[in-house]
Image (cartoon, rainbow, N blue to C red):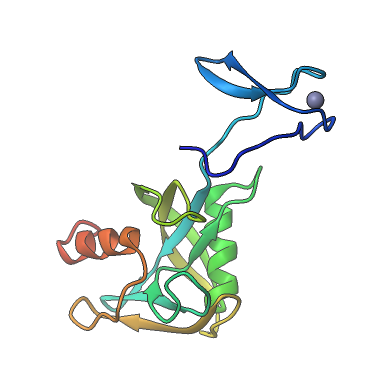
Length: 168
Ligand SMILES: [Zn+2]
């Protein structure tokens, strides 16, 4: 499923036609030969634990405003996903967190603007003070039996695995 129709060449502005390229019908520019690929959006998130509690942020923006998720966001083009997770975590929680292990890769786009998959890293805090920011309006620690309303299926998957002891 394509998220949007692409009509014009991103390089030269010529109208695109559809041709078979790399095993599928794709928008192709008849003038400069540009091929348009509908690539998945990639998100990266930090799974940070301290004293048997996990760090979650409350979303200040739609979708899922008011519900809680792991700190994270979209990976920019040419950005290391571990650095993207650290950047988003710093913006949303005020904490400097570095990615250690890659914990999980959770696939599945949950809404039209959402990521095709989310890479979760275990995060280790190196500095900072807890302070919500960017598209989070609260940040807090939660034990496995005192969780708030969760924003996304992917975060729910992570919490279920955590509760089952997969990350210890
Ligand atoms: Zn073109």
